[in-house]
Amino acid sequence: MENKKEVLLSLKNAKTYFPIKKGVMKKTVGYVKAVDDVTIDIYKGETLGLVGESGCGKTTLGKSILQLINSTGGEMLYNFGGNIGVKNLKKLTSAEMKLARKRLQIVFQDPQSSLNPAFTIFGSLEDPLKQNGVAKREDRRKIIGDLLEQVNMRSEYMDRYPNEFSGGQRQRIGIARALSVEPELIICDEAVSALDVSIQAQVLNLLKELKEKKNLTYIFITHDLSVVEYISDRIAVMYLGKIVEIADAEALYENTLHPYTKALLSAIPVADLDKKSKRIVLEGDVPSPAKPPSGCTFHPRCKNCMDRCKTDIPALKKYMVDGKEHFVACHLMEEQQQATPLSEQS
Ligand code: SF4
Image (cartoon, rainbow, N blue to C red):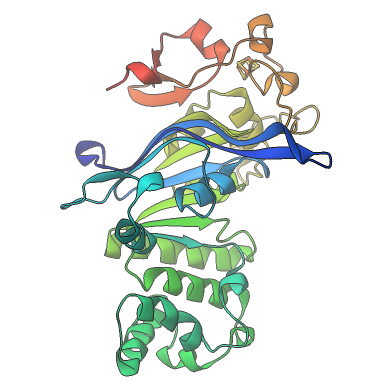
């Protein structure tokens, strides 16, 4: 992928803030900064893992990209290709938005939520097809049958109801639903978190297989670092609405640089005792995004905290580690290595 990196989606200083309202007049007294100044490129054909503890803003970021939540600031530039070219997802015409709704899809943690229990699978999956101009019922049945076979299920299952399937089967149906409109980018939001480990592996393998066959791009959102290593090409780590580290999956696990990522990785159970590092126990809870700590928001929990960490916000900067790009937002790294600020990179 190094040789032919084509940017599909470029987030520039993306922000999603939720106002905190108080009193009879519902006056805005502050903001919950769920996504705060996120800048990252997502390349065509890659799987970007987006990880962090619950409440770090990763799901809000996913929903902001899909325009399911209004973002507050910054740009989300999507490369539609062809005559349309690169457009800000926040400023699309209605025709472009219709196209964006096809190109960008989501698979939820709970597939039940996207399947109406009163409808058969055919009933649930035919809607997006109707909206995209597949007028004849027999054509929709043929397409849905094929989609079910692509996710390793029998085509005749389309006449059954959601409660007749296991969690893993429902997740396959959720994937088939996302695929029905031939998307380019799929956001998998904790897509395997609710499944048993053996079923998780089957669904992850299916996602990998479909990605290759259909040239898909994934943003794989999860709190589970052992899952994300298996499926991701690159991994971005979020803490309190900000990205604190981005690297190739292998580089992130081999040369972990940010103290927060080190603590997350040290908590993964490892079968090989030689590879087991000492668990780093984080002090305290994740602070509220409504009242984030000053400077580096991780400083109250960081054992490497220095004076400047309490006042200065560390910028995400590029470092070269073993010849590979590695982005980190940490003052400790700035003192140890020469970095290139993100704004100065081509
Ligand atoms: Fe720790 Fe300071 Fe780095 Fe924040 S900037 S992670 S407090 S060393």
